[in-house]
Length: 118
Length: 172
Length: 337
Image 1 (cartoon, each protein chain N blue to C red):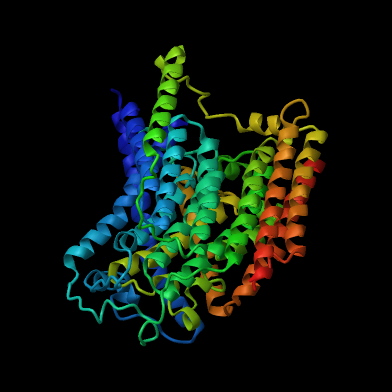
Image 2 (image 1 turned 120 degrees about the vertical axis):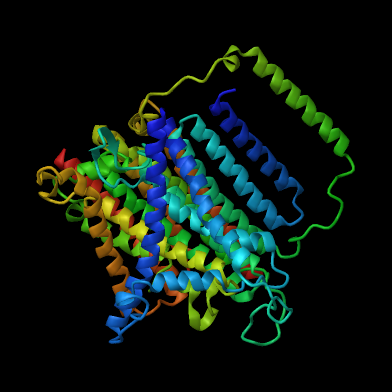
């Protein structure tokens, strides 16, 4: 298993090289004639109004929070699924109970309108 | 020094450096991205231990979910995006002393343990046995109670977050 | 770990990288020609026979284009963002098996890069980090459209990731393993799409959303966000975003083919004498091509979904349905046992 991860690790390093080489090559070959008009931020061709980094909606945060909870539960479900064929009936229902608690959480979020996009 | 140890040292240095940059970065969002790199270093450390399940959990949950939550939180707080004041608190000397004492204590404890001088034990050739892990999580004589309690705890955390954010909306 | 093994591994990884890059170039041509056919046009056919040199011409043009970095942008992050976007789309293919173990030059060579025992979770993990390049690009550009596009894309991808993850549980339940090699071998008799067509359809929809393709290409909705997160990118950096999108399309098609369409297996192909075992990669390629055509077909046919409906569809339709399909699959496996 260690060799498998070693392969993945070195593949990651090789994969970094591809875009890095592309950017370096373009950096050498591309023309560089910059001026303030060219580097101004695009906004429909008019003067920029206000900062771009504004305060975002709280809704994004709620989505991320709900996602985090379900992500953790989903990851815990994978070992259960792997062992599923060896499990006695009781343990199978433990897993299903886990799923149902999760479903309860989903319906709470639904009822409270946390999934609505305002 | 074997190639394996060099790889480990590189990963450890990367993790430590990015952890330090989380503290020293002047922009909050830069801190968040350094934190992602630090978490990635931890995942790589798990990979050197051949603990595959922990590698993917570390990446999927910490980098894939918690770090996104942190980035959204940073973008929610517009005012404090850039820190321009002094980065050291007045009492930083005392804090450094406490940190040194704790670090020394940890090193001392680890040196007492014989296992630290031995090479890590090799797990089974095919990596850890996920079937055993799955069985352990749901078998009544093993960890079924923590497993179910964890799910209840997660749902409770979500309900809390929704309540807090919903309250915020009514006020504004 | 000897010299020959390292050589074998280096050859394999370089091959995958070259294949994905070439695949990206010709998928763009394939898409442009197909969309032209759908719209009763001719499409690019001037550069080389049937326009086959068009991707080369495009690549050369983009290398020589001036690259601009907008004023007040975060320069380091602005350059880093396209690199970070490309990497996950490449490394997700590391665990996809191209074929079984074959005899090559007197060695037993497995036709996959790494058989990680948590292969499917590895794919989940890599998909979940692929949002960062886009968020980073949106934030670093210091442009309102880019920021909005990046944010929207992040929220969309995490919403559809949940349904995708539960659909991944279905093949695990059926095969009893997380390793993609085991999952493909379990489909030797019957493909999982025939056992669980519902989960396969949900997975296909979520994968369209994960790669931000039509009808879920909200992050780059031209009419309202100009070009979304890559509004400010030009030249090679733009090409890298473009490349990441198409490589993701190929990777996702390969993963879908592996999970539900039997991967490198096709009835009777491996019984062909002599060359049978070597045909695995070609079977997988043929399936990938069919799925890529599906991507293009959908883009030519369906209009874009409104953002609030898109989020509602992910959370209120696909997520409960994917949970249901896990329960149904569990019941099915129990009954067979």
